[in-house]
Amino acid sequence: MMNESLLLPDFRRAICNEIDIEQEGRDRYIVYTPFMFDDGDHFVVLLKKSDGAWYFTDEGHTFMHMGYSGVDFTSSSRWRVIESALQNHRIEHSDGELRMRLVDDHAGDCLFSYIQGLSRITNVTQITREFVAATFMDDLRELLGTLIPENRRTFNWFDPVRDAEGNYTIDCMVPNEDRPWFIFGIGNDDKCQYATVCCLHFETLGVPFQSVAIFRDQPSISRKNVARLTDVVGKQFSSLHDTDRIRDYFGHVVLSKTSRT
Amino acid sequence: MRPVLSDAQIDLLLQERKPLPSDWRTKLDPRMRDSNSESDHAKLHIQGAAGNRFRIHIRDNSKKTPLDFSVILVFTDEGGNEYRLLRHNGLHPSEHTNKWERDQGLENVKFRKKFHIHHCTERYQIAGYEEDGYVEPTAKFQSLESALVALFDDHNFVYPGERAGQGHLKLGTDDE
Image 1: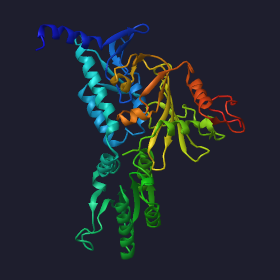
Image 2 (image 1 turned 90 degrees about the vertical axis):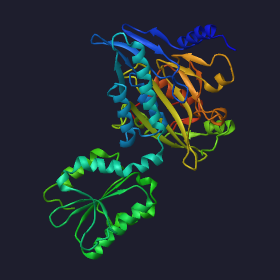
Image 3 (image 1 turned 90 degrees about the horizontal axis):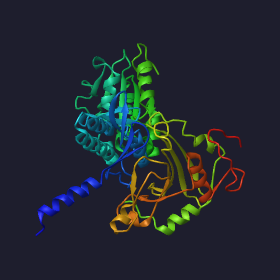
Image 4 (image 1 turned 120 degrees about the horizontal axis):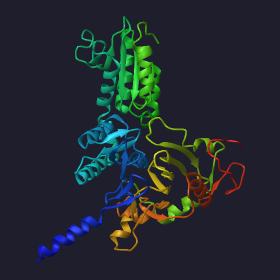
């Protein structure tokens, strides 16, 4: 059986040897740790003094490295996970840089919390496309909630008179004099076909309306389905990513007093 | 599951003739910042002479850390699977560990703060590691621009109207 009195010092030495610090300029130190990205590049951890306080910072490297994955980690669902990690580990985010202020006498705790936070943040690139697809409607609803005042929107609206069973439910309806806006979230081919059918249905009934389709990822939808929807829907956005343009359109067109397309 | 690219396939892809479009300089200027990105980045799609699809991707974090950049060559197969064939990296203030070699108990698997190249390898893919987890330090480049030139010179990129290796690199101006 292993002798604990011999094991523990070796264990401590081995752990300590994995952490190193090297001065690189005035008030700037590189902290070497064994924690790494999946490709073997280690996390960048710098200890820097700024405005009289000491900080751990990655100088923007973490987000740059996450960009290699090709995964859009600024999408709403992934960004929520990042924000949670930032909050839980008291890490500040500013222009891509992640930093944490050192608390006196707790440098070790701060370092490990900072690294744990970086680890949680980098894991966001592992969140699958399926997960993002699954949260698309939640993300859309959240966005529309910020764009349209509560008293001017109805989620999951259906016509109580002509469609009491809700067979042609609209993701979001914005009343507008005699031509309401119908807003559809298009996450997959089935939903694309459904939105097309809904628009045709209301056209057939002679119901005047205006419509917007917001895709999760338009290139992932069959071209034929997109073409059919294009024939009947008013405005389209190819992804939720285009937030500025969506925001602009809703502000200037959908919510304008005399909105007509 | 993504198919494994063999070392022979990787070599063929790297050797494939890759004509650069006339506007490659502006497209590869990382100062043309993508508003959705936290670091400056740029990308350029290229079709190889054998019909394979490549993309060069540049990420530049040098505003925050001098010489922290990446020049990445990505291959997209017919099924849409992407492979990072090469990554010319700058000086990250951190270490790198070659995980596969570490697992074999080999020496010199770690190094610090060196210009380096990530290589796509068959063995890393089979071991379940990132395809470009194998890294070699390099003296071929010392800046983002020279990293791009090294990529062009070593992997059969052809400048518009010129033979490979004769282009004059200055990002941001298309004067062809």
